[in-house]
Length: 113
Length: 114
Image 1 (cartoon, rainbow over the protein chains, first blue to last red):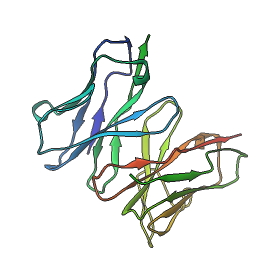
Image 2: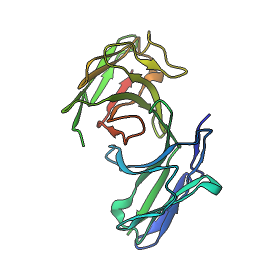
Image 3: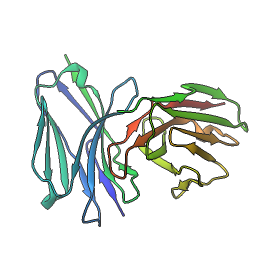
Image 4: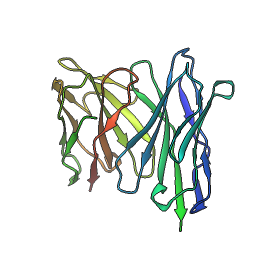
């Protein structure tokens, strides 16, 4: 069965600090997809990134970067020079074989000025 | 990405009643899903809405409690039947262009049952 573990329930940082959100996944599929979503206090879910199991290259988008390591079944998310607007709950998810998403429990990030 | 409109955005309902939530997309999409997010919790898939046929329900969710329709490629409804306080949640629809394509979510329906 698929499972996504986000061990960090809440993280609090001061603005401009770097922060890494951890995600560990379990799957029996040889081909799979991993996702990160952001849910700000307003409640909408915002898609951030999708990564397939064949592409282990790290990805950078502005202040955001993702580190995918199949050897440790991890797909970690780093925010560089965090800002107050980054405060949100961040969800990691694994794509199931039927197209559904298996979500982790989420990590609530608070960035204080 | 597609624009997703979900109605109502919130409602307060009496125990034992039913509420139908609508999800309208501004373009045809291959896949539509319904999720539940209980207060302070993660998202749990209720079912995959299949166009023209019965929805595919996840373990723990049944058609009698959560009937779903999807008459075409742009519209779906979820009904929460015979509601109890335990059904108080945010209900979200999502759409995707295909299996394991990014899912995009509506703003959700915040449902409270008294």
